[in-house]
Picture (cartoon, chains in turn red, yellow):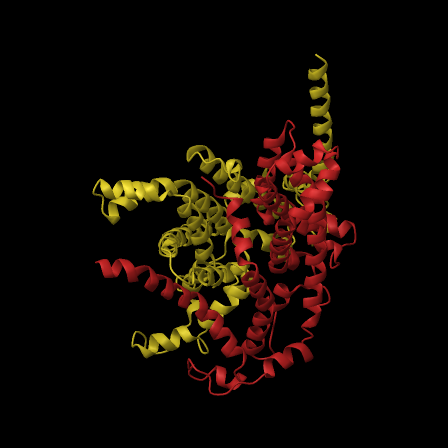
Length: 273
Length: 305
């Protein structure tokens, strides 16, 4: 019993890490397997590794186009949200005014908004403005989920900073605005970076809006491009998996690098005694 | 008197500054989220068929909602959404709790494990869906190969053409992707529980099981409720996963409500009817959130304060 108590958690965690990691391992191995071999009996350890699928992905399918589109859309959305959202979050975290709690509750409510419920007016609006299949036509809809997310995350980061900081600055005669620019913002750079990373990841992964408001490969983002991959005779699994690996690698890298901060940001905003 | 005046002045100056800071973000949210939502409601009261522009956009009161109430495909979609939500949320909470309890036992390498656990949550849902579709592919899939190897099956099984079997990869993919996230939320809750409480329970002679029932579960309740809310609302609007994995098929037997709404809008171009479905999705989501907040008494805005 005592031995189980000590080893039980390690075994549970070990199994779960294996279960989590296996699909990734399998995708990488399969993306390096020649197409003909994919349909033979699968073996856990590859006998032959080739880069054919990756070459085809970039040479024949121009996969750099969706990557460029995703970067442009995610980058612009994030930049706008962090700029505008940090002001809003600072006021909600540190300034005294009526309506503060209702505004917070409202912003939280919007983060839980089902995206599908505004697809129809956004489509009609973007069509009327001639923005279907354009970058602004994706950035605008993306603000619906990215803005509340950014504000919500930043509020919890700003709250963690000690209040004495601004008080000291203002006792020295600095205005609130200067205290914010010169003291709060520089000190919350880690929080801003984490928020920016999370917002980038959400935009990079977004599918429904990107599928609804683009028409062709020239503006499709990475998830849409992968989901709509078609082969001539059969599903081009090798290339799909290569694309999946390419789409996952940057996200996985960011998460691994910033995991401590990300976990803090995610859980501070949601759970606390 | 003078001092009081000055504080009132300072306070209103602070309030003015606060509004100046808050307004740009609030205005953005109003313009791109709230205004479109009102537009959806308005649109849902009309017949608006982009394929038949000559019919105009006649106002039809609640005719679209009446149509939904007698639409078998709509009720089917609601049922599929319920199956998916109950199935995935239950599995994710149970497995997430086990994983969180295991992670909470201090041991070396926890940071590494925590990072590994974050990765599936952070990758695009589309990618997760494709990985699981590939693993459940009839010919190339490893699921069939393993099941045949261990003698449970004699020949490859085509998972995605059977109405019930198609749920297996769908639910597994979601559980694989989201359980780690649930575990992280619960782990944060576990770490807030004071060790001295377990000490006290042990002195009172409580074994591990009774400690779990009487200390862990009650104190973890807020974290469990938050995870429950986020997962339920997320599962209810499932779209990407099923669009890519089964396309709602075979036929429409795994089609969730968000996918049916999408098809009504952008495949059939029936904007009036599709908007009515959108409003129903919104109302149900809102109702679920209200139910959780009122009945289960969760205050989400308290969090982080």
